[in-house]
Image (tube, rainbow, N blue to C red; front, side, top):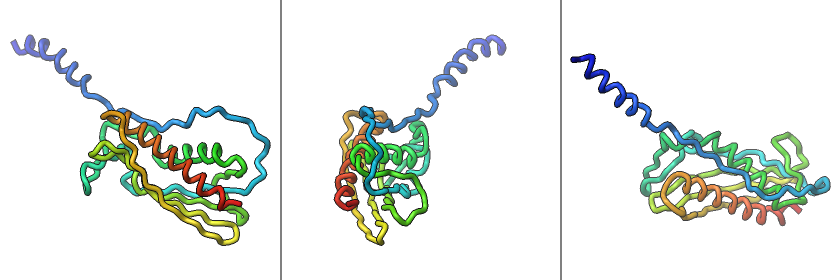
Length: 189
C-alpha cells in the first residue's frame, strides 16, 4: 500500500520541484547606434576613473524601494553581471557617441588628462511605479580644476515587472549620460 502511494505521489513531487522558478537574470544593453568610423580623436583626454555604488547596489539582486525608508533586494531578479560594470560600459558608449572630439581612456596614471568619477546613490525601482536614478559626478582637470554636479531622475515604468523596471533604469541612465556629456563638453575645452 505504501509503495503504491509513493508511485502516485512521485510524479507530483517531481512536478512541484520543477515548478520552483529559478532566478531570472537581467542585463543592461548597449545602445544599438550605428558605429561610425572617425579619424583618430585629437581632443582632450578624458579618463573615467571610477564608478562607485553603495553596498546595496553592488549586490546581485535588483533593488526595489518599498516605501520612503525600506529597500529590498530581489532574490529571483538578478543582474547578469556586476552593476558597476554594466553602468560603466553604457556610460562610456554614450560619452564616446556624444563627445566625438574627446579621447576616452581607461584607468591610467597621467597628469595630462581629465579624470571623471561617478557616485551612484540610487538605481532602483520604487513603490509608485518609478525607476530612480540619482548620484553625482566630479571632474578633475590636469591643472587642478575641479567641477561637480548632481543627477536625479524618475523614469516611469511602462508596466509592472522587472523587465519593465530594467528597461526604465537603462533609459534613465542613458538620458543622464547624455546630459552629463552636455555638461562636460564646455568644461573639457
